[in-house]
Image (cartoon, rainbow over all chains, first blue to last red; front, side):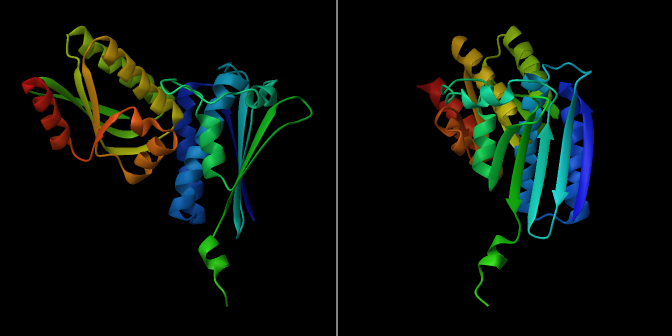
Amino acid sequence: MVKYTFIYPSKVEVSDRMLDDLDRVIAQQGIEPTIAEHLRLAVSEAFTNAVMHGNNQDPSRLVKVGVQVEETVVTADITDQGSGGLARIRRRKPPEPLAENGRGVDLIEHYADRALFREDDDGALVVSISFERNKEEQGKIT
Amino acid sequence: MEIAVRECGSVMVLDLSGRLDLASGSALKEEVKKLFGQNRTYVHMNMAEVEFINSSGLGSLVSIMKEVRLLKGRFTLSNLASYVQEIFEITQLSHIFEVFPTEDEALASFQTVSAS
C-alpha cells in the first residue's frame, strides 16, 4: 500500500496544482486509465466543494487530499475545515436543468464504486471515494 | 486552459484546450462576455483539446448558454471527447446544448439557420 497526502489552501486557483499532484500519483502508481479518469473527476468535485462550501474560500483554512493506492483498490479522502457539510449534502435537491451548479455530488456518486460522506470529530466533512482496480480480471473464472 | 478565438463568418469560434473547471470557467465566461460586448452572439466552441471537465466547467457553459439565449444568439459545441460526452449525458446537459460531432457540421448549421 502506498499513501500520499497533500495539503492546499482554500483558493480556487489551487485546483490545477491539486490535479497536477493527482496526475503524478496516477503516473507513478500506474493507475488504469478509466479509473484515473473517474478518480480525477470525483476528487476534483470533492475538492471544489471543500474549497467553495466547506471552507468558504478562506485561504487560511486547508483542504487535505489523501490518496491510498492498493493492489485492488484506490481510495481518496478529501477533508475540509468547515462545518455542517454533511447536512448540506443530505438536504441537496436535484439541480434544475439550467442550474449552474449542484451536480458535483451526483457525479461523485455516479463514478465512484463507493462514496462515503461523514464528519470528523471537529465537524469537518470527509469525503471518501473508492475505486476497485482490475475488475475485469477479478471477474474471470479461473 | 488556453482559449483561442477566431472568426468564421458570422460565428466566433473558440478553440479550448486543457482543463475546464471553476477557475478556467470564469476566464472563459469573461472571454465570451467580451464577444457579447462586440455584438457577437453566434458562438461556437471546439472542445477537441479539452482534456478535463468537471461540474464547475459545465456550469460555466450553462451560464454562457443562458446569456446567449437572452441576447437571441446561438451557442454550439463540437468535438467532445467520449469522456466529456459521457458527462454531458449523465448530467442530462446533452439535451440542453446543441452538440455536433464536428466543427464543420456546427458551422454549417449556423448557415442553415441564417438562410431560413
